Amino acid sequence: MTAHSNIYPTKALQELDAAHHWHPFSDMKSLNEEGSRVITHADGVWLTDSDGKRILDGMAGLWCVQVGHGRREIADAVYKQMNELSYYNTFFKTTHPPAIALSEKLAKLAPAHMNKVFYCSSGSEANDTVFRMVRTYWDKMGKPEKKVIIGRWNGYHGSTLAGTSLGGMKAMHGQGDLPIPGVHHIDQPYWFGEGHEMSPEEFGVFAARKLEETIDEIGEDKVAAFIAEPIQGAGGVIIPPETYWPEIRRILKERDILFVSDEVICGFGRLGEWFGADYYGTKPDLMPIAKGLTSGYLPMGGVMVSDRVAEGLMLAGGEFYHGYTYSGHPACAAAALANLEIIEREGLVERVKTDIGPYLQERWLKLGDHPLVGEARMKGLMGALELVPNKKDPHKPFENVGTVGTICRDISFGNGMVMRAVRDSLIISPPLVLTHEEADFLVKTAEKTLDDTYQVLKKDGWLG
Ligand code: PXG
Image 1: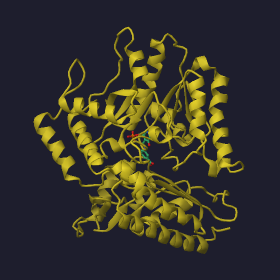
Image 2: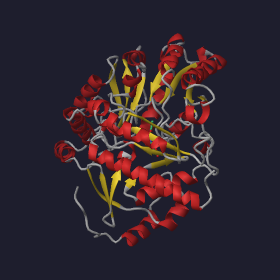
Image 3: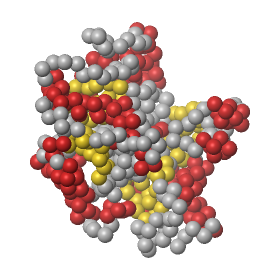
Image 4: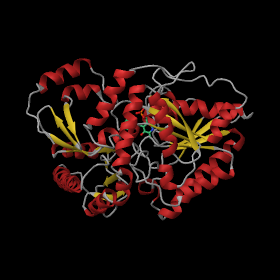
C-alpha cells in the first residue's frame, strides 16, 4: 500500500488524453469536457490516481485482476520469458515451452472432458473463435444445416462482430447493423427485473423453457449451439434462480445442441470454483476464457475445447482456417502460468468458497436493508445492489434508467472505491485476495455511498 505524492500534472494529462485518446464504451464528447481520471499506480486491491488519491478497486480492474495488482513474480516471469523468447508463432507446425506448459495446466484445471485449448488475445476473439468452431464442427459432422447459435438478451460476449452478435445488448446491435444472420436471443433469467411475479424457482424453469421453445420453433436440426455466461457480468450480475441451470442442462441433453459456457468473468475462481461450469454442474462443449487467465497482466484469451468437439473438428483431417498472430504468445503464456501458480499456491479459489466469499456476502447482503436498495445479491465475489426509488414497490425502476446509477457510481469514486454502474444497479467484483479488513472498508464505503446518494436524490426529488 504505497502512497504516492501528486507528481503528475493531472490537468495536462487530461488535456492530452482528450486530444488523442478514443476510449472504449465512452461518450467521448462529454468525457472530454469532464476529463478522464488518470490512474498511475496499483498495488494489491488499491489504485492510486494522479492526485495521489487511493481508491479500492472493487471491480478488479474490469473483472479480471484475480491475484491483485503489482505481483512482482508475474512481471519477473514475463521478463524472463521475453529474454528467452519474446515472440514466436504457433502456426506452421511450431510451438514453444510456455504454450505447451500452459495448455497442460489448463487441461488439468478444466472439467475432465476438456483437454484442448485454442489461444487468442481476448474474450471477444475467443467468442469469434467459438462462432466459427461451432459451425465448422457441425459441417464436419455432416450436419451443415445446423447453423443457428442462440444467446440471451442482456448477455455479453464481447464487442467484435461475432461477440456483439452473440451478446444481447440492444444498444450495441444498433451500431453496425448487428446481429449477423443466424443468431437468436432468448430472455435472460433476471428474476428481480423480469420475473418477480413468479417465485424465483418457478421463474428459473420458465426462463429455461424459453430455450426449449426457441429451439423447437427454429427446429433442432438447424440449431448449432447455446451460449451463456454462468452468471451474467456486464449485464448486471444476473444470478439465475437455482432451478435454471438444471433445466437448461436437461433441454440441451435431450436435443443435440452444443453448450458454450462463457467463462470470461466466472472462470478462474470468481465463484469459488475454477469455472462457473463447475459451480453450476453444467457440462460445456466449449468454454471461452480470458480476463482471470492472466489476471489482466497481459492480454490473453482462449477457448477450452471438449474431447467431443476436438474429435469432431479433427475428423477426416483438414485445417481449421483460424488463428491469430498472437495465439499462444509466449510472454502472455508465461504471465498466465505465473498467475495460475499464485492462485493455486495461495488457495484463492478455495478462499472465495470458504473464507472471503462468505465473509463479504454476509455483509453485502445486509445492504439490502438500506432504503435505496431493492435487492442485494452476491455469489462468490460478484455482487450487485439494485437501486430503487421506493423500497415498498421495489421492482419499479427509476425514470431515465442509468442516471441514478451513474450518480451513485461517481459518489463511490469520490468516497474512495470503484464500483461499476449497470442501469441503476451497482456492481462489485473485487480481487480474490481481498482481506477481511478490506472487505469491511468495501462495505462501509458502499454504505456511505448509498447514504450520500440518498441525500442527493432526496434533494433533487428522485425518491417516490
Ligand atoms: N465474454 C464475457 C462474459 C465478458 O464479460 C467478453 C466476453 C469479451 O472479452 P474482451 O477481453 O474482448 O473484453 C467479456 C468482457 C463491463 C465490461 O463494463 C465487461 C467486459 C468487457 C468490457 C467491459 O462490465 N467483459
